[in-house]
Amino acid sequence: MATMTFDGIGKTFDDGTVAVANVSFTVNHGEFVVLVGPSGCGKSTLLRMAAGLETLNSGSILVDGTDVTHAEPQDRDIAMVFQNYALYPHMTVYENMAFGLQQRKMPKAEIDRLVQDAAEILDLTRYLHRKPGQLSGGQRQRVAMGRAIVRHPMAFLMDEPLSNLDAKLRVQMRSELKLLNQRLGVTTLYVTHDQVEAMTMGDRVAVLKPVSDAQASNLQQIDNPQRLYDQPANLFVAGFIGSPAMNFLRVDLVREIDALMVRIAGTDISFPAPKGRGLEAHAGGQAIVGIRPEMFLVSNLGKALFHEPIAIAEALGADTFVFFDIPSSPVNINDLSAEDGLPPQRGQTRLVARIPPTATPALNDRLALTVEFDRLHWFDPTTGTAISADRSAI
Ligand code: ATP
Image (tube, rainbow, N blue to C red; front, side):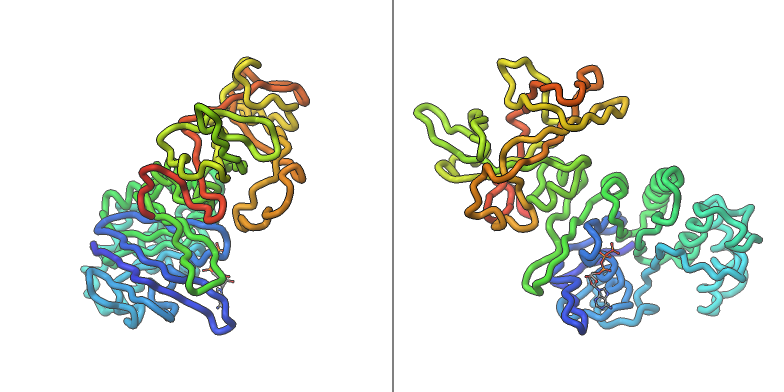
């Protein structure tokens, strides 16, 4: 077990592509940290930097306090598990797992003990004589894990190790990998673009975003999964975590005689601003409100905030997702200045609400919906950072 610290690391490729910029965080002893983000956000590059397969332009990497920034991969005592498993097809499972140890000239009996132990843990004992081509995808994945485990490394690095598996096996391997981590207690850094994998496996999840500027930072927030969901630090995290994604609307904060009112830009829909959420500081200006699909409530017409024709109703059995449009310009979370100067009426924003299946409307029926006002998320309309009376640091 070890800690792994990334201190302001950066990587710009020779062609000028900024892959990783200003990323700092620590993976604690035995912790399972997941790196998640859209394609091109630098996940694989960061992992390869940790493994020593990619050089750094800036910053440093420490393992248990020792600077390994310039250490060769084989000197880092870190085991990497790749997406394609990288097994030797002509070797048996046993030989695949033993190979790295033989290279290190470990005594035969010791190798045998380590391979048998790992096979036992991974339920591979009866397949030790088979070749990779004679195994299922999940079994191959376990062999790749076995090859990492026998080394008893200080840390594991895993790059989308489940992405070649079918959906059912992925779910099974997800919990197996997590259990294995708890059992072995090995510090693990795990890359995926799948937010469900990130949320279910990570002790903490680091959300990365693509950057084009070496002065920016890919790292948007690192937190435990529930906090990422409940307290996203900014629009990017709020929009990335959660499915269907959070709805965003631009609002005006209008001071009336006895209350601060929230009015959805371009509409006459308004409601009192929830207290204690830091909105007072934005009175007279704008904010962006974030509404998760489950924050909508089916209401009676008198209390309805929205009463629009339903454009799509997806009945999933346990829940129904209903989609409807309101006449307010969509928020472009990747470029908040994009709407500047445009009259809000110029656009339509499609919202999605999760409702009980018993309330499923017919298409084009109008559905009366309100929201749980106290649970709404609020963001600064120019920076995209969360507005909160007690905003916690990223
Ligand atoms: P994905 O989920 O698609 O695998 P990722 O988050 O792992 O993406 P990286 O593979 O780390 O992203 O790539 C980050 C950025 O660096 C991308 O814009 C990519 O095109 C670029 N990149 C990666 N390798 C190189 C390279 N050798 N030369 C130039 N640019 C590169």
